[in-house]
Length: 378
Image (cartoon, rainbow, N blue to C red; front, side, top):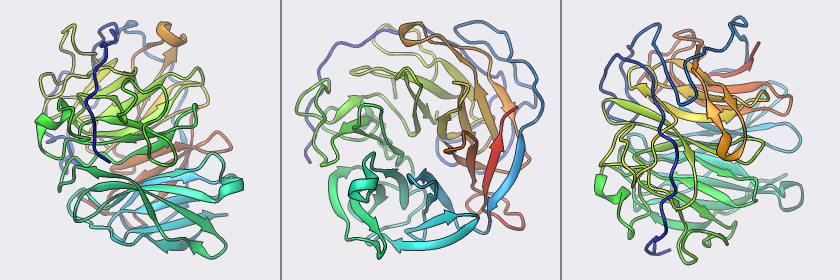
């Protein structure tokens, strides 16, 4: 699909700040080193009140010995699907047992690329359809395929031409509450692509299940929903429809953004809070040493939870209000250093959180890594 120009008014958002005084260079990808302040200070747009200390989360192992897991999504029956990035394989977790359902052809696992995001059709019970985001030799693309009793069907590309590289491939995909598919892309190391209307890189895209620009996009003939992103790897929605995205910074600030259509989030002109009227500032930022954020989810209490790679933590960001009145307060750091690098987090059907570790890539694997963890917040 050839991208078209996105023209639209930029929507303002109140400036917010900010987490952590310590610095570190993550390079904005899956940084390998671990560091940062053990007790970072924080302030946000709604003040500096920390959430009450309700005790450590309860953590249990669901699955072990996975090879570079990247994304997790749930089927209507409660089973989970997980992508294995380098193998190009999808596995199914049912009652603690892991089985392979199939390999996606054409996956080119290079650096941070490979088989990345996974989304289950909202109508899976009727259409048995799933979607994946994968790196090929030519590009990053979104594929649609069936998943039935005989495993994976043949993949059909529905969106192609997303820039690929060894770094900054984005890759998270998710269905929004409107039934359309959202696609997070990275700048693939070419910073100018995030601001270019002729590139799908450095954007959040919104498409139909057939890969066409979704009705109501800022530009009717373009899939672009928002621009000015560096490397988005987390997408989630609150109960009121508020859209959240996590984003890797370069060497100073990682971000949590509230996403509104047609908005420009500033990269490469701005990293973190810029205070410039033409760009939307993040609602919270972290030192790259404390985060390197990947997957996010909205927990059953409405808070945004964010898996951190370099920061080896699960960050919990309290959220209050709805719509334009939505505010966040001081994030709470959980599981720091206990399970190594964390790649993804998803809300399970029982309202627990399932988290993927990511120590078999740029980490220090422990016996049983990589794992799926079940976490209950207290």
